[in-house]
Length: 184
Image 1 (spheres, rainbow, N blue to C red):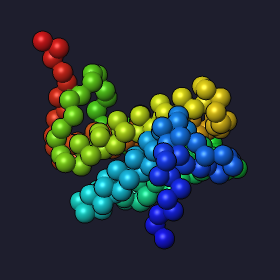
Image 2: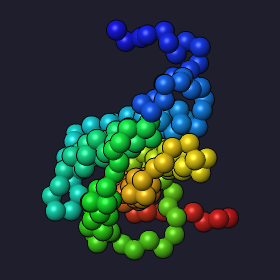
Image 3: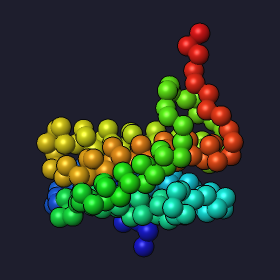
Image 4: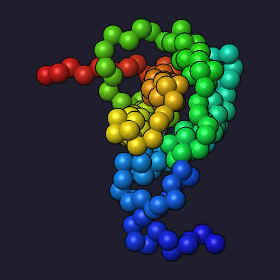
């Protein structure tokens, strides 16, 4: 059954809690933000596969995104109180991909106006959603609601860097020049 009616009063339950919590609580907000980025990454994955978009070393971007989605489920489980978390190796994997992408791109000298290819815009949007999810998880840790592993926090921080690099790479491969703001 897809519904239980238990949340009709605006409450939900996490792994670590026998009590119901408000759906507007900081933990529910963080879980929802992680769910949102995970779902949006599904769109990025489908578009990446359709365009046959690869990161350096001929790795399919869709597979990279799929791995991220699986890792985000680990982050959600940790946030909900399960005894699992992101390890340092997963952080290093993301850093390695970002480093390989950066070697192909011109150096960053300014902020860029989002646009170019549809795939780049999707990655840019995913980046902003991932930043919101990161802020929500940091909020949970600051309020001491649930302990979050340092590598989980680092992973969330690197995720937005990876998505930014993917947006830049999508435009670069399409021959679209990055445009910075003119502040006029």
